[in-house]
Length: 160
Image 1: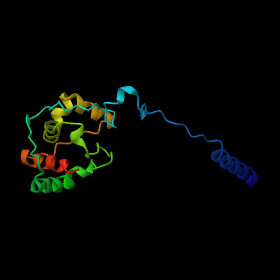
Image 2: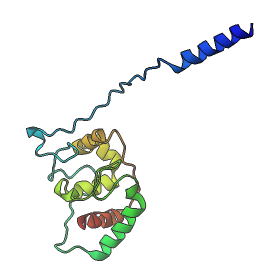
Image 3: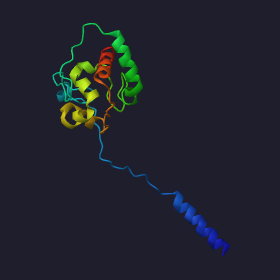
């Protein structure tokens, strides 16, 4: 009887250890990073560059001075480092796009409207919708900044 139990236990051990194949799950997500002729006017994220789009929100016009306002930029840097770095890095893609060179891709109005009104932008703005799709539906949360705080962050982004 002990021999039979030992044989059954040994057989179960052998059966459980061998022949298991790992299956690759198809989650329906695929990213293609190859560049084509049609992506030449797009950012590295694959989203079109649009400097004319002002976005959806309270900001209709932003006029940057020729010189960067260092005091404003310092306040903007502090605000960026306290809330934005959770999703954005200066020069690398993270949960959200890299911020370096943002004004080569977007208008200042668009940037400030995205900061102040991300919910409305994600619902109505085609660039914001494309970025949402590009970044796996990672929604930018409303940080409830004032226009002055958003302007400070916008000034800081000029320094990058």
